[in-house]
Length: 376
Image (cartoon, rainbow, N blue to C red; front, side, top):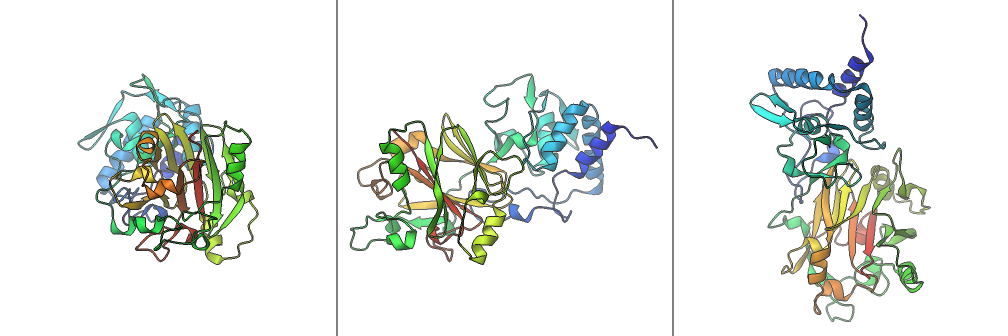
């Protein structure tokens, strides 16, 4: 039987849909317990045969109405899991589709089929800044590329016990009952892990163009030099099919630890760091959770710093400009010990740290980043 190219693309797209629980294909990296994305995973209970057949028929009928070139764009994005750069897929935003008793807009249906089967409402989503539809309100054509979207990471209140990070660990070095020494954290003269001789040099040389610098660490050792960031968006990755940015795989590391090597291999597509009008966002592009500590993610009155778990496909505002200004208090241990380069955010790949982990300090994590903001 003769089959058209269009029908072949549609079949390939359906085979590449996001797995649901029971398929045996769901990404194990999307699950975990606790953290800011608790309960927000890409798996849902496998639907019954009737609703599955209905969803398949509906998806096929919609895809067959899309132009071949647009189907190729969608297929490129879906099959590469966002690793390959794909253009926007601009389609009418007001077309509704009905599955059972539930109606979905065309973009929502494609996001559910190809990214998040458990997606309930568009308010759970954040459009990535690379998208043409970013910042536009109710356009006639909206980008439906599932990999131009991310899920919003909702902070829990109160936080799970594993994420509490005592402020006692951040007392100034001259305090009688000081927290970790520089040898424990990998720092130099500060209790928080820093390694800032390069970034201080950047400041002193009069370079004001960068808005942040990034340091990559393996346990207590910094690998490579600081990466200065001028562009609004930066990909930090180990292995990305079409990657531009900070490639950790190109850095020379002498660390022979099996755990470090295992975690390094899991970084994959890594993260995307984006400077936006309201702050700096981190998008987890990898297949495994990342863990983030930032003072602007905390309650201003809290006496603990929290370590937040961010699942694959989720975004979190890691640094809030407004909160950062209000948090500069004279007796705030977190900020009084930061060097004059500005504020820092710490991000660990795969492995978390804190009270309920064997790793108390981020310097015990196999692979992690320190993002140092230039607030001048």
